Length: 220
Ligand SMILES: [Zn+2]
Image: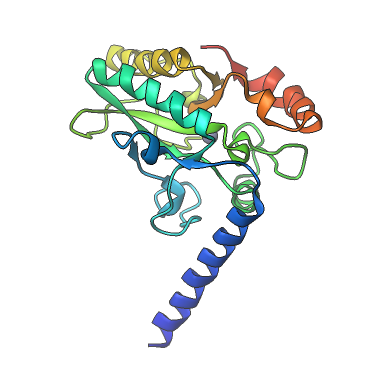
């Protein structure tokens, strides 16, 4: 009994933290599925199925992005469905409190943005998503790596020999590039709207431009 009540307190605290993080943001955010209900969402940080082995979001958390980003995801989804595939969203808006937790756990700036410097992660501005490809029956398809694989195998240009994986990644990148996203060199699943600068305050945009914009950003 004690176990369950303690667990309830932890869950309640997590929800309170999440709600306060949401309340603190002034960014306009919408649920991706409210704009396009066909987009499949499986937020990996809402479950233990992520590198941290912790659920960092409360169960049932929605994939939130800026409205303009949601419309672009809907365009990417429409493109993919014409090719008998669809999008699955692994992460979207990420409160800075969660970004700080990820940074503490990973300590690797090639893969996790340090939230203490400048604008932090573009996920915390509602302009980045982590996405993969699935088939029309919601089955996963072969991709270069799993989510948050912090190895060179996760780079945006597939280096392996599997033609199926290469074709899947190219299709995902064609869909996202055509819808107005750019890629990240170290993570094939990470996409940012190409005009992300206009959604950040000027000082944050400049600082992020000096890191993401020069080192990691890749044009699709
Ligand atoms: Zn990402």
